[in-house]
Image (tube, rainbow, N blue to C red; front, side, top):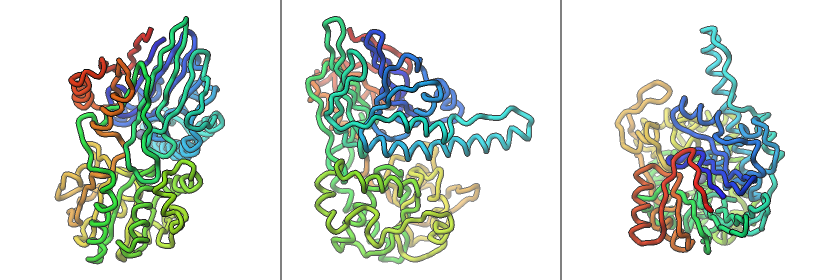
Length: 462
Ligand SMILES: [Zn+2]
Protein backbone atom coordinates (compact mmCIF):
# COMPACT_ATOMS: atom_id res chain seq x y z
CA UNK A 1 0.00 0.00 0.00
CA UNK A 2 1.36 3.38 -1.03
CA UNK A 3 0.34 7.02 -1.11
CA UNK A 4 1.63 9.15 -3.98
CA UNK A 5 1.87 12.92 -3.49
CA UNK A 6 2.01 13.77 -7.17
CA UNK A 7 1.20 17.48 -7.04
CA UNK A 8 -0.26 20.05 -4.62
CA UNK A 9 1.87 18.97 -1.66
CA UNK A 10 4.00 22.02 -0.95
CA UNK A 11 1.79 24.57 -2.74
CA UNK A 12 -1.90 25.35 -2.90
CA UNK A 13 -2.75 24.42 -6.50
CA UNK A 14 -2.79 21.32 -8.71
CA UNK A 15 -4.04 18.78 -6.16
CA UNK A 16 -3.26 15.21 -7.40
CA UNK A 17 -2.96 12.19 -5.07
CA UNK A 18 -2.61 8.51 -5.95
CA UNK A 19 -3.61 5.67 -3.62
CA UNK A 20 -2.10 2.33 -4.57
CA UNK A 21 -2.94 -1.13 -3.22
CA UNK A 22 -0.96 -3.86 -4.97
CA UNK A 23 -1.68 -3.63 -8.68
CA UNK A 24 -4.63 -1.29 -8.20
CA UNK A 25 -4.57 2.49 -8.09
CA UNK A 26 -7.02 5.35 -7.57
CA UNK A 27 -6.44 9.03 -8.30
CA UNK A 28 -7.94 11.55 -5.89
CA UNK A 29 -8.35 14.86 -7.72
CA UNK A 30 -6.69 16.01 -10.93
CA UNK A 31 -6.18 19.69 -10.34
CA UNK A 32 -4.73 22.38 -12.52
CA UNK A 33 -1.47 23.97 -11.39
CA UNK A 34 -1.85 27.76 -11.40
CA UNK A 35 0.83 30.41 -11.08
CA UNK A 36 3.80 31.35 -13.23
CA UNK A 37 2.75 30.50 -16.76
CA UNK A 38 5.75 28.49 -18.03
CA UNK A 39 6.22 26.43 -14.88
CA UNK A 40 2.48 25.68 -14.63
CA UNK A 41 2.35 24.72 -18.32
CA UNK A 42 4.99 21.98 -17.83
CA UNK A 43 3.33 20.62 -14.68
CA UNK A 44 -0.10 20.53 -16.33
CA UNK A 45 1.05 18.83 -19.53
CA UNK A 46 2.93 16.20 -17.50
CA UNK A 47 0.41 14.47 -15.21
CA UNK A 48 3.13 12.92 -13.02
CA UNK A 49 1.72 9.36 -13.01
CA UNK A 50 0.71 6.63 -15.46
CA UNK A 51 -3.00 7.09 -16.34
CA UNK A 52 -3.05 3.55 -17.75
CA UNK A 53 -2.63 2.13 -14.23
CA UNK A 54 -5.69 3.82 -12.72
CA UNK A 55 -8.82 1.83 -11.81
CA UNK A 56 -10.82 4.92 -10.84
CA UNK A 57 -10.76 8.65 -10.17
CA UNK A 58 -12.40 10.34 -7.18
CA UNK A 59 -13.11 14.05 -7.15
CA UNK A 60 -13.30 15.97 -3.84
CA UNK A 61 -14.92 19.16 -5.14
CA UNK A 62 -15.31 21.41 -8.16
CA UNK A 63 -12.57 24.01 -7.57
CA UNK A 64 -10.30 24.22 -10.60
CA UNK A 65 -7.16 23.37 -8.57
CA UNK A 66 -8.83 20.01 -7.85
CA UNK A 67 -10.72 19.21 -11.08
CA UNK A 68 -9.16 21.47 -13.73
CA UNK A 69 -6.77 18.96 -15.29
CA UNK A 70 -9.26 16.10 -15.74
CA UNK A 71 -9.45 16.78 -19.51
CA UNK A 72 -5.67 16.18 -19.76
CA UNK A 73 -6.23 12.82 -18.09
CA UNK A 74 -8.87 11.73 -20.61
CA UNK A 75 -6.73 13.13 -23.44
CA UNK A 76 -3.99 10.79 -22.16
CA UNK A 77 -6.36 7.85 -22.62
CA UNK A 78 -8.15 7.45 -19.28
CA UNK A 79 -11.67 6.06 -19.82
CA UNK A 80 -12.63 4.78 -16.36
CA UNK A 81 -15.16 6.18 -13.90
CA UNK A 82 -14.88 9.59 -12.19
CA UNK A 83 -16.69 9.35 -8.86
CA UNK A 84 -18.04 12.46 -7.10
CA UNK A 85 -21.12 13.71 -5.28
CA UNK A 86 -23.97 14.73 -7.57
CA UNK A 87 -23.48 18.47 -6.88
CA UNK A 88 -19.74 18.20 -7.57
CA UNK A 89 -20.44 16.47 -10.91
CA UNK A 90 -22.92 19.22 -11.90
CA UNK A 91 -20.67 22.14 -10.90
CA UNK A 92 -17.52 20.60 -12.39
CA UNK A 93 -19.20 20.49 -15.81
CA UNK A 94 -19.70 24.29 -15.64
CA UNK A 95 -16.16 24.89 -14.35
CA UNK A 96 -14.50 22.77 -17.05
CA UNK A 97 -16.47 24.40 -19.86
CA UNK A 98 -15.13 27.77 -18.72
CA UNK A 99 -11.58 26.43 -18.16
CA UNK A 100 -11.51 24.92 -21.66
CA UNK A 101 -12.65 28.25 -23.11
CA UNK A 102 -9.76 30.00 -21.31
CA UNK A 103 -7.25 27.38 -22.59
CA UNK A 104 -8.51 27.83 -26.17
CA UNK A 105 -8.36 31.64 -25.89
CA UNK A 106 -4.84 31.55 -24.44
CA UNK A 107 -3.59 29.33 -27.26
CA UNK A 108 -5.25 31.54 -29.91
CA UNK A 109 -3.59 34.63 -28.39
CA UNK A 110 -0.16 32.95 -28.34
CA UNK A 111 -0.64 31.71 -31.90
CA UNK A 112 -1.21 35.27 -33.12
CA UNK A 113 2.31 36.02 -31.90
CA UNK A 114 3.97 32.74 -33.02
CA UNK A 115 2.51 32.91 -36.54
CA UNK A 116 4.04 36.37 -37.02
CA UNK A 117 7.44 34.92 -36.09
CA UNK A 118 6.93 31.80 -38.22
CA UNK A 119 7.03 29.52 -35.13
CA UNK A 120 5.00 26.29 -34.81
CA UNK A 121 1.41 26.51 -33.52
CA UNK A 122 0.71 26.17 -29.80
CA UNK A 123 -1.90 23.53 -28.96
CA UNK A 124 -4.29 24.39 -26.10
CA UNK A 125 -3.83 22.24 -22.98
CA UNK A 126 -7.34 21.00 -23.74
CA UNK A 127 -10.47 22.04 -25.59
CA UNK A 128 -14.21 22.11 -24.92
CA UNK A 129 -14.44 18.78 -26.77
CA UNK A 130 -11.92 17.24 -24.33
CA UNK A 131 -13.95 18.58 -21.39
CA UNK A 132 -17.07 16.93 -22.87
CA UNK A 133 -15.30 13.55 -22.73
CA UNK A 134 -14.81 14.04 -18.96
CA UNK A 135 -18.51 14.79 -18.50
CA UNK A 136 -19.44 11.35 -19.85
CA UNK A 137 -17.32 9.55 -17.23
CA UNK A 138 -18.97 10.99 -14.09
CA UNK A 139 -20.55 8.50 -11.70
CA UNK A 140 -22.46 10.54 -9.08
CA UNK A 141 -22.89 9.31 -5.51
CA UNK A 142 -24.14 10.53 -2.11
CA UNK A 143 -22.29 11.15 1.12
CA UNK A 144 -21.79 7.99 3.23
CA UNK A 145 -22.39 5.61 0.36
CA UNK A 146 -19.75 2.84 0.45
CA UNK A 147 -18.16 2.45 -2.96
CA UNK A 148 -15.65 -0.20 -3.96
CA UNK A 149 -13.36 1.73 -6.30
CA UNK A 150 -11.03 -1.21 -6.95
CA UNK A 151 -10.19 -4.50 -5.20
CA UNK A 152 -8.94 -3.47 -1.72
CA UNK A 153 -9.99 0.21 -2.00
CA UNK A 154 -13.34 1.26 -0.53
CA UNK A 155 -14.48 4.92 -0.36
CA UNK A 156 -16.94 6.70 1.92
CA UNK A 157 -17.37 10.46 1.39
CA UNK A 158 -18.05 12.84 4.30
CA UNK A 159 -19.31 16.44 4.11
CA UNK A 160 -16.32 18.81 3.81
CA UNK A 161 -18.28 22.07 4.34
CA UNK A 162 -16.02 23.85 1.84
CA UNK A 163 -18.14 24.41 -1.28
CA UNK A 164 -21.42 22.84 -2.42
CA UNK A 165 -20.92 19.09 -2.91
CA UNK A 166 -17.41 19.07 -1.40
CA UNK A 167 -16.30 15.90 0.34
CA UNK A 168 -13.71 14.47 2.68
CA UNK A 169 -12.67 10.99 1.55
CA UNK A 170 -12.41 8.05 3.96
CA UNK A 171 -10.58 5.20 2.22
CA UNK A 172 -10.43 1.66 3.63
CA UNK A 173 -7.41 -0.06 2.11
CA UNK A 174 -6.93 -3.78 2.53
CA UNK A 175 -4.35 -6.27 1.30
CA UNK A 176 -2.74 -9.45 2.62
CA UNK A 177 -4.67 -9.38 5.89
CA UNK A 178 -3.88 -5.72 6.65
CA UNK A 179 -6.42 -2.93 6.72
CA UNK A 180 -5.40 0.74 6.84
CA UNK A 181 -7.90 3.59 6.99
CA UNK A 182 -6.76 6.79 5.30
CA UNK A 183 -8.69 10.06 5.42
CA UNK A 184 -8.25 12.95 2.99
CA UNK A 185 -9.26 16.38 4.27
CA UNK A 186 -8.19 18.31 1.17
CA UNK A 187 -9.87 20.80 1.05
CA UNK A 188 -11.44 21.20 4.49
CA UNK A 189 -14.12 23.87 5.00
CA UNK A 190 -15.35 25.60 8.12
CA UNK A 191 -18.36 25.86 10.41
CA UNK A 192 -21.24 28.33 10.00
CA UNK A 193 -20.86 29.07 6.29
CA UNK A 194 -24.22 29.99 4.79
CA UNK A 195 -25.94 27.64 2.31
CA UNK A 196 -23.80 24.55 2.92
CA UNK A 197 -23.59 22.21 5.90
CA UNK A 198 -20.81 22.20 8.48
CA UNK A 199 -17.87 19.84 7.91
CA UNK A 200 -18.21 16.38 9.44
CA UNK A 201 -15.43 14.89 11.53
CA UNK A 202 -13.79 11.68 10.30
CA UNK A 203 -12.93 9.38 13.22
CA UNK A 204 -11.07 6.10 13.61
CA UNK A 205 -8.39 6.86 11.02
CA UNK A 206 -4.87 5.41 10.90
CA UNK A 207 -3.53 8.04 8.54
CA UNK A 208 -4.76 11.56 7.74
CA UNK A 209 -3.78 13.59 4.67
CA UNK A 210 -4.81 17.17 5.39
CA UNK A 211 -4.62 20.60 3.80
CA UNK A 212 -2.76 23.41 5.57
CA UNK A 213 -3.64 26.57 3.61
CA UNK A 214 -4.30 28.54 6.82
CA UNK A 215 -2.14 26.44 9.16
CA UNK A 216 -0.74 29.63 10.66
CA UNK A 217 -3.86 31.84 10.63
CA UNK A 218 -7.15 32.34 12.45
CA UNK A 219 -10.19 33.76 10.61
CA UNK A 220 -12.89 36.08 11.91
CA UNK A 221 -16.03 34.12 12.80
CA UNK A 222 -18.02 33.30 9.62
CA UNK A 223 -21.18 34.48 11.42
CA UNK A 224 -19.81 38.05 11.30
CA UNK A 225 -19.90 38.07 7.48
CA UNK A 226 -23.44 39.50 7.05
CA UNK A 227 -22.80 42.42 9.44
CA UNK A 228 -19.41 43.20 7.84
CA UNK A 229 -21.11 43.22 4.44
CA UNK A 230 -24.12 45.26 5.63
CA UNK A 231 -21.93 47.93 7.16
CA UNK A 232 -19.91 48.67 4.00
CA UNK A 233 -22.89 48.33 1.61
CA UNK A 234 -25.16 50.58 3.71
CA UNK A 235 -22.54 53.34 4.00
CA UNK A 236 -21.74 53.24 0.27
CA UNK A 237 -25.38 53.25 -0.89
CA UNK A 238 -26.18 56.04 1.61
CA UNK A 239 -23.65 58.34 -0.09
CA UNK A 240 -24.99 57.38 -3.53
CA UNK A 241 -22.11 55.11 -4.51
CA UNK A 242 -21.75 51.71 -6.12
CA UNK A 243 -20.49 48.64 -4.27
CA UNK A 244 -18.08 46.67 -6.49
CA UNK A 245 -17.34 43.14 -5.28
CA UNK A 246 -14.78 40.98 -7.12
CA UNK A 247 -15.84 37.40 -6.49
CA UNK A 248 -15.03 33.78 -7.28
CA UNK A 249 -17.84 32.21 -9.31
CA UNK A 250 -18.23 29.15 -7.08
CA UNK A 251 -19.57 29.50 -3.53
CA UNK A 252 -18.45 33.08 -2.77
CA UNK A 253 -20.82 34.56 -5.38
CA UNK A 254 -23.71 32.48 -4.02
CA UNK A 255 -22.85 33.41 -0.40
CA UNK A 256 -22.94 37.08 -1.39
CA UNK A 257 -26.31 36.71 -3.13
CA UNK A 258 -27.68 34.94 -0.06
CA UNK A 259 -26.36 37.45 2.49
CA UNK A 260 -27.40 40.50 0.47
CA UNK A 261 -30.92 39.19 -0.22
CA UNK A 262 -31.32 38.17 3.45
CA UNK A 263 -30.30 41.68 4.57
CA UNK A 264 -32.75 43.24 2.11
CA UNK A 265 -35.60 40.93 3.20
CA UNK A 266 -34.88 41.87 6.84
CA UNK A 267 -34.98 45.57 5.94
CA UNK A 268 -31.31 46.07 6.84
CA UNK A 269 -30.32 47.18 3.33
CA UNK A 270 -32.30 49.18 0.74
CA UNK A 271 -33.56 47.08 -2.18
CA UNK A 272 -31.21 48.48 -4.84
CA UNK A 273 -30.35 46.45 -7.95
CA UNK A 274 -27.81 43.67 -7.36
CA UNK A 275 -26.04 42.83 -10.61
CA UNK A 276 -24.51 39.36 -10.90
CA UNK A 277 -22.20 40.18 -13.80
CA UNK A 278 -20.73 36.72 -14.39
CA UNK A 279 -22.44 34.17 -16.66
CA UNK A 280 -20.46 31.36 -14.99
CA UNK A 281 -21.51 32.45 -11.47
CA UNK A 282 -25.12 32.63 -12.70
CA UNK A 283 -24.91 29.11 -14.11
CA UNK A 284 -23.43 27.77 -10.86
CA UNK A 285 -26.13 29.61 -8.87
CA UNK A 286 -28.71 27.69 -10.91
CA UNK A 287 -27.04 24.43 -9.82
CA UNK A 288 -27.33 25.63 -6.20
CA UNK A 289 -30.99 26.38 -6.76
CA UNK A 290 -31.52 22.82 -7.99
CA UNK A 291 -29.49 21.18 -5.20
CA UNK A 292 -31.53 21.91 -2.07
CA UNK A 293 -30.69 18.44 -0.72
CA UNK A 294 -27.15 19.70 -0.21
CA UNK A 295 -28.12 22.93 1.57
CA UNK A 296 -28.17 23.56 5.31
CA UNK A 297 -31.09 24.59 7.51
CA UNK A 298 -30.12 28.29 7.42
CA UNK A 299 -31.02 28.49 3.75
CA UNK A 300 -34.15 26.41 4.09
CA UNK A 301 -35.42 28.83 6.81
CA UNK A 302 -35.37 31.94 4.60
CA UNK A 303 -36.24 30.03 1.46
CA UNK A 304 -39.91 30.94 1.84
CA UNK A 305 -39.16 34.57 1.07
CA UNK A 306 -36.14 34.14 -1.16
CA UNK A 307 -37.49 31.05 -3.01
CA UNK A 308 -34.12 30.70 -4.74
CA UNK A 309 -30.82 32.59 -4.99
CA UNK A 310 -31.65 34.08 -8.39
CA UNK A 311 -35.37 34.67 -7.71
CA UNK A 312 -35.56 37.99 -5.76
CA UNK A 313 -36.62 40.87 -8.06
CA UNK A 314 -33.51 42.96 -7.16
CA UNK A 315 -31.14 40.27 -8.56
CA UNK A 316 -30.23 41.18 -12.16
CA UNK A 317 -28.15 38.94 -14.42
CA UNK A 318 -25.88 40.53 -17.01
CA UNK A 319 -25.78 37.76 -19.57
CA UNK A 320 -24.37 39.75 -22.50
CA UNK A 321 -21.39 42.09 -22.79
CA UNK A 322 -23.83 44.84 -23.82
CA UNK A 323 -25.79 44.45 -20.56
CA UNK A 324 -22.52 44.45 -18.60
CA UNK A 325 -21.40 47.68 -20.29
CA UNK A 326 -24.72 49.34 -19.44
CA UNK A 327 -24.14 48.56 -15.74
CA UNK A 328 -20.56 49.84 -15.97
CA UNK A 329 -21.64 53.12 -17.53
CA UNK A 330 -24.51 53.79 -15.12
CA UNK A 331 -23.96 55.80 -11.91
CA UNK A 332 -27.01 54.50 -10.03
CA UNK A 333 -26.39 53.25 -6.48
CA UNK A 334 -26.21 49.47 -6.80
CA UNK A 335 -24.22 46.37 -5.89
CA UNK A 336 -22.12 44.64 -8.56
CA UNK A 337 -20.72 41.12 -8.14
CA UNK A 338 -18.32 40.18 -10.94
CA UNK A 339 -15.33 37.94 -11.63
CA UNK A 340 -12.53 37.35 -11.30
CA UNK A 341 -12.00 37.08 -7.57
CA UNK A 342 -8.51 38.59 -7.66
CA UNK A 343 -9.35 41.21 -10.36
CA UNK A 344 -6.90 39.68 -12.85
CA UNK A 345 -9.45 38.71 -15.49
CA UNK A 346 -13.11 39.10 -16.27
CA UNK A 347 -15.68 41.86 -16.16
CA UNK A 348 -14.72 43.29 -12.75
CA UNK A 349 -11.82 45.09 -14.45
CA UNK A 350 -14.24 47.15 -16.55
CA UNK A 351 -16.24 48.08 -13.44
CA UNK A 352 -13.05 49.04 -11.61
CA UNK A 353 -11.76 51.08 -14.53
CA UNK A 354 -14.95 53.12 -14.54
CA UNK A 355 -15.58 53.27 -10.79
CA UNK A 356 -12.21 53.28 -9.04
CA UNK A 357 -11.75 57.05 -9.31
CA UNK A 358 -15.08 57.86 -7.62
CA UNK A 359 -14.79 58.37 -3.86
CA UNK A 360 -18.48 57.56 -3.30
CA UNK A 361 -17.88 53.97 -4.49
CA UNK A 362 -16.56 50.99 -2.52
CA UNK A 363 -14.45 48.05 -3.62
CA UNK A 364 -15.11 45.16 -1.27
CA UNK A 365 -12.61 42.30 -1.17
CA UNK A 366 -14.11 39.04 0.08
CA UNK A 367 -11.50 36.48 -0.97
CA UNK A 368 -7.85 35.54 -0.88
CA UNK A 369 -5.73 37.93 -2.97
CA UNK A 370 -2.54 36.29 -4.23
CA UNK A 371 0.75 38.17 -4.54
CA UNK A 372 1.25 40.23 -7.72
CA UNK A 373 -2.48 40.47 -8.52
CA UNK A 374 -4.51 43.67 -8.92
CA UNK A 375 -6.61 42.51 -5.96
CA UNK A 376 -3.51 42.35 -3.74
CA UNK A 377 -2.45 45.85 -4.79
CA UNK A 378 -5.90 47.13 -3.84
CA UNK A 379 -5.77 45.21 -0.55
CA UNK A 380 -2.41 46.86 0.22
CA UNK A 381 -3.93 50.28 -0.54
CA UNK A 382 -1.61 51.19 -3.43
CA UNK A 383 -2.64 54.78 -4.33
CA UNK A 384 -2.27 54.16 -8.08
CA UNK A 385 -3.01 50.89 -9.93
CA UNK A 386 -2.80 49.76 -13.56
CA UNK A 387 -5.90 48.42 -15.35
CA UNK A 388 -5.74 47.46 -19.05
CA UNK A 389 -2.37 49.22 -19.30
CA UNK A 390 -3.60 52.59 -17.95
CA UNK A 391 -2.89 54.06 -14.52
CA UNK A 392 -5.76 55.00 -12.18
CA UNK A 393 -5.78 56.80 -8.82
CA UNK A 394 -7.67 54.75 -6.24
CA UNK A 395 -10.30 57.13 -4.84
CA UNK A 396 -12.99 54.53 -4.06
CA UNK A 397 -12.96 53.11 -0.52
CA UNK A 398 -11.27 49.68 -0.41
CA UNK A 399 -12.43 47.29 2.32
CA UNK A 400 -11.27 43.74 3.05
CA UNK A 401 -13.80 41.57 4.90
CA UNK A 402 -12.04 38.86 6.92
CA UNK A 403 -15.06 36.76 7.88
CA UNK A 404 -15.26 35.29 4.36
CA UNK A 405 -13.17 32.16 3.82
CA UNK A 406 -14.10 28.66 2.72
CA UNK A 407 -11.02 27.06 4.30
CA UNK A 408 -10.49 25.73 7.80
CA UNK A 409 -8.18 27.87 9.90
CA UNK A 410 -5.50 26.66 12.33
CA UNK A 411 -8.04 25.93 15.09
CA UNK A 412 -10.31 23.92 12.73
CA UNK A 413 -7.36 21.96 11.33
CA UNK A 414 -6.15 20.98 14.80
CA UNK A 415 -9.69 19.88 15.70
CA UNK A 416 -9.74 17.67 12.57
CA UNK A 417 -6.48 15.98 13.61
CA UNK A 418 -7.68 15.46 17.20
CA UNK A 419 -10.96 13.83 16.11
CA UNK A 420 -9.32 11.62 13.49
CA UNK A 421 -7.29 9.53 15.93
CA UNK A 422 -4.63 9.19 13.20
CA UNK A 423 -1.11 8.40 14.36
CA UNK A 424 0.40 9.83 11.19
CA UNK A 425 -0.53 13.08 9.45
CA UNK A 426 0.67 14.16 6.01
CA UNK A 427 0.33 17.92 5.56
CA UNK A 428 -0.25 19.10 1.99
CA UNK A 429 -1.86 22.01 0.10
CA UNK A 430 -0.07 24.84 1.92
CA UNK A 431 2.87 27.18 1.60
CA UNK A 432 5.94 25.95 3.47
CA UNK A 433 5.72 28.38 6.43
CA UNK A 434 2.09 27.49 6.97
CA UNK A 435 2.80 23.72 6.86
CA UNK A 436 5.70 24.02 9.26
CA UNK A 437 3.75 26.12 11.77
CA UNK A 438 0.89 23.60 11.77
CA UNK A 439 3.27 20.62 12.03
CA UNK A 440 4.83 22.21 15.09
CA UNK A 441 1.43 22.70 16.73
CA UNK A 442 0.36 19.07 16.04
CA UNK A 443 3.60 17.72 17.47
CA UNK A 444 3.59 20.09 20.46
CA UNK A 445 0.20 18.63 21.43
CA UNK A 446 1.57 15.11 20.92
CA UNK A 447 -1.27 14.33 18.50
CA UNK A 448 0.58 12.49 15.72
CA UNK A 449 3.76 12.03 13.75
CA UNK A 450 3.81 14.66 10.97
CA UNK A 451 5.24 14.30 7.47
CA UNK A 452 5.62 17.16 4.97
CA UNK A 453 5.77 15.46 1.56
CA UNK A 454 7.21 17.09 -1.55
CA UNK A 455 5.95 16.98 -5.14
CA UNK A 456 6.23 13.50 -6.66
CA UNK A 457 7.08 11.63 -3.43
CA UNK A 458 5.65 8.22 -2.57
CA UNK A 459 5.26 6.75 0.94
CA UNK A 460 4.70 3.10 1.94
CA UNK A 461 1.82 2.50 4.32
CA UNK A 462 2.51 -1.15 5.07
ZN1 LIG B 1 -11.15 24.20 -2.76
